[in-house]
Amino acid sequence: MNISFHGHAVVQFEHNGSKVIIDPFINGNSLSDLSADEVKADYIILTHGHNDHVGDTIEIAKNNDAKVLAPVELADFLEGHGVKAVGTNIGGTYEGEFGSVKWVHAFHSSSFTHEDGSNTYTGMPTGLILKIGDKTVYHTGDTGIFGDMELISRLNGPIDLLFIPIGDHFTMGIDDAAYAVNHFITPEIVVPIHYNTFPPIETNPEDFKAKVSCECQILSAGDSVKF
Image 1: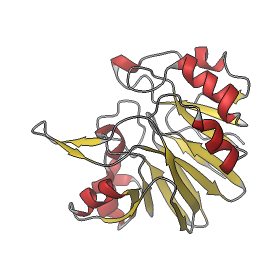
Image 2 (image 1 turned 60 degrees about the vertical axis):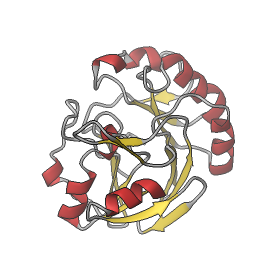
Image 3 (image 1 turned 90 degrees about the vertical axis):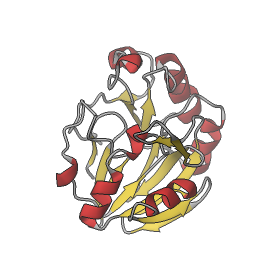
């Protein structure tokens, strides 16, 4: 199975002939190796409505006639921009050709900022539990640390692969992320995300790797997880 990372919080995979991209922030993402007009996707999965996660969803969805899976308020907002969207909510699961995705809690905020500076509320922020073949993947989305990460992992795990933010400022930083990995989630493999894209979230992922007790894979844009 190929699961690849493309800078910030962007993750891609293909399973059972379905191509999936998560939080496709490409234009404006200096760390991305992708071109939005070249992305092939059958599904786009979103964790929340911030611009650095919605990213190029509308363009990619229209180019590919892709289905967008997102928290219901965000899905309604995107439908208003002419894309096919399925609204979901925390605790809900969507079954697709690729496997399944379940939306779980994240502690953050969620709104889309327009060019004039106004904001549209886009529902609760979320994390994702993905069942892809025989693998369970937890993409935490943007979040601070919270104790129910342990409950989420117990109910839905064991977790084979975890994507977790380490950039601080807007999400948890290295120390909190490492504590969550070691004490709450205990995945087989962890991949740090949401760092070094902007000056406020610049940090050294090697410092995170040194603090976690599981295998840590630090990926550059375009790299794939080694299972």
